[in-house]
Image (cartoon, rainbow, N blue to C red; front, side):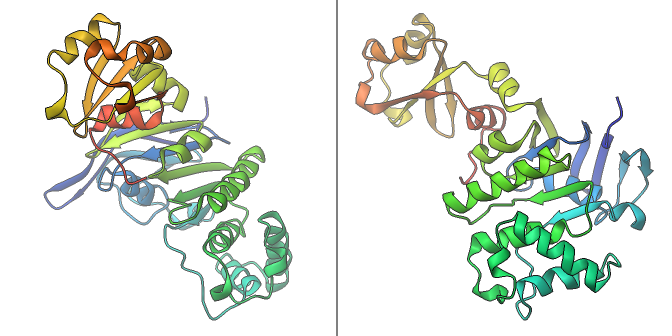
Length: 309
């Protein structure tokens, strides 16, 4: 299979500190691939090496079949569209002027940049904001404009660094809708996010990272099926107040007790049955919450750390 990006034993050191400890991954054309991890896990370091803001210390990286060593060459940077975590729009310019100026960095003529810019504003639902100063835009509109700007050079690969941080739920879902449209058009997307739901909504596959390593990789559904049981009961009782022999009682009922971030989670194949008989463990039903297992459960189990959601 031909991969649009692939890495083998990729490592990055800063003096004595090893930020990335030898990771390997393959990204297919047209998929959304996510890097999921807490701050300092190594996901941003990986992204920076891919689009050329950081050199490679060890291992190798290929983009579009071209080996990168030690840094992404300028001609390959042209295939990327970058959506940074912070909105770094020019506050002195209008919406369309921001796109026109950015297009100049790719040697796109002013006329062509305006044509492309207007098309992108239509695509991102911002056509009524063409001549508005960016300072007057809402947070959600600014994020959509940053994504539109990243598309001005018609990139083959889009790097999305925390694309919806700080947005309200409605604005976040609108951005998700636009990103799905891009994927349908064959654009490859690399995503870092703290939002577990975002990763589940957008990613075809993802890598869960911790301490410079990839702990697990696969589709959200595959990771949930592989690492946890289908249902979970969150116990809202402090650990020091749990009934005696709780682990044995849960096991006898066919469940699995997991302790993560100072809380007890009961995983089970049959959520309703466990829920209806939870009193047999000594727990009160009102102190427990039954739900389907999700990607956050996998993340917690593998890393032991809860992200700020």
